[in-house]
Every structure is written in C-alpha cells, then in structure tokens.
Length: 64
Image (cartoon, rainbow, N blue to C red):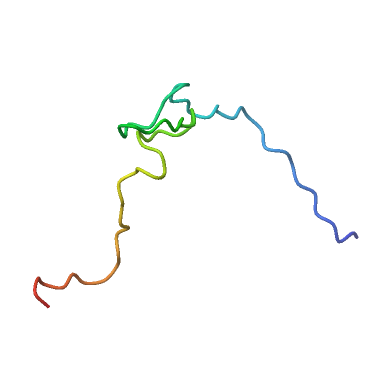
C-alpha cells in the first residue's frame, strides 16, 4: 500500500476574461490615466469615489 494521492486535471473549457474595451481613459476632467481593458470602472484609482463596506452590527440612532 502506498501513501500517495493522485489527482486529476480540471476538465472543460474555461471562459475568457471580460473585456471592457481598449483605450479608455479616466472620466475625471484633466486626468489622462488609461484604464485597463479588464477594469469595468469609469475612474482610475486616484479619482474613484470612496466606497465604505457594510459593517456588521447594530445601527446607532442619529445624535449618539
């Protein structure tokens, strides 16, 4: 008896990465940063609006 395991390769076709077009530029006026063709956002990292993650726990009422 041997102590080795043998796996199999993943079968089937993999889907290609989504493409959002070439030559896109940040939407901020005056910014010439080119966006990656795989980046679905409109703005570069420097001009992207701030997003805060959902925090777990209770929501405190205003004024506390």
